[in-house]
Length: 268
Image 1 (cartoon, rainbow, N blue to C red):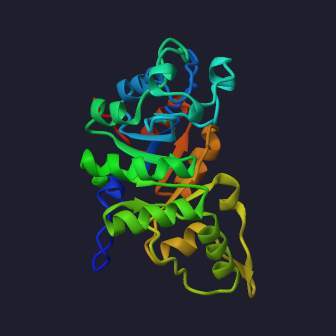
Image 2 (image 1 turned 90 degrees about the vertical axis):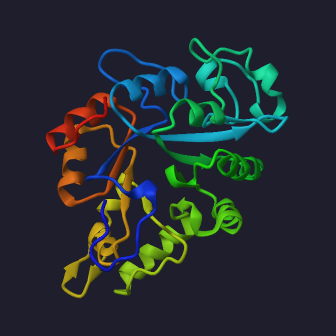
């Protein structure tokens, strides 16, 4: 997305020629095979497919190492009743998820220097090491932090200020919906992008005799909107036609087909 003349400059993370195709947790689905989410194999395949925006979750081990994982344990992804917060990285690195151990966030950042990362710290304990890592690796320009915790987002913004791109938290999204329903101007200080579940784009409060669309509402103040998690090609195409600024998906095939049909060229 490119800001219109006179608008405030966007974070580098948001500067993209057209809508952003973002692989969600490494986009573990496609028509050929299935890899485990948030693994090196998933991110490797996405990168080879030409994608340069990765969404991932981070948790922290007992000894403070950030790893890419959504759940608090390995039960769903590896069949192990191992709590990530209760083991050291040395212990966790000996447990395969798919064919390899879970990747450390630092390894993903180093392995893919031309990739932008949308990072969701899943626990409070992950915030401080995340802030430290982003500063140490000097990757704020290619990072966006999102969270279902308003507190974690507040901590990140306090620590990093406007140097880092952050998405709206739950309270901020509720405030946006309230403002939209009340016919107000969207006003969310500190928020650089709305990242919303796809069902939220269907909510259209009535203002007088007409209904107002969330995408239209955000567009009035040049606030980008990313939608998650969209795995249906027809729905993704409709969202792009409505002007969304980014889509997260678990399926690299769907992302490729729909985005190339809309003019996107994968990196090679």
